[in-house]
Length: 191
Image (cartoon, rainbow, N blue to C red; front, side, top):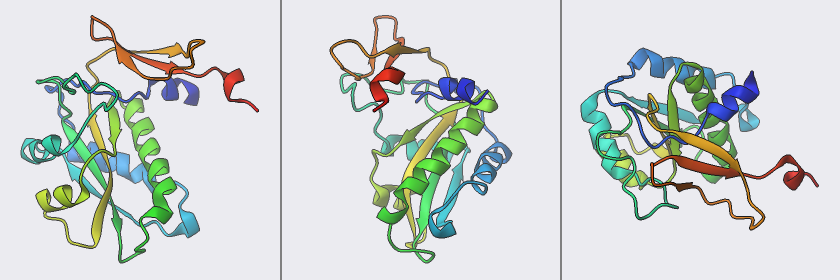
């Protein structure tokens, strides 16, 4: 069952904008993070929930998507996420951002797996300017955005493939806009 969720949990870059996500749904996703491990049990993160169209529209242009596909505008117009979770480190709890980077991955993956279980999908976005996000959302100086999670009802096809003999792992899209994600085989990752 977990493996099925993992296979469904893709980095979606296309969403059905008619499917709105409620604040209660976002709170439920964040609630799952309370049960995750945290370095020295510090739990330094706070979460900004954005699901109203105005706030989502403020965040979207401050994000950069699919760096490996610079010739494409993703998400395509009319297929943007309908919610964002902004994971912030509360520097009053601990000032060292770098120390908790692995914790960011743990909570983000937990959120996305919980989203998939609800029939939703998302994308972790690290390509943004924290100061711009902080200013756009009027966050206090102590809350430093460390990762964004775009969320919505997926509206694109993603296919997992095996990495070829050439070893290239770059994701790509075909002429039908189907997104392909090469994955290494189990034998290739075992030492």
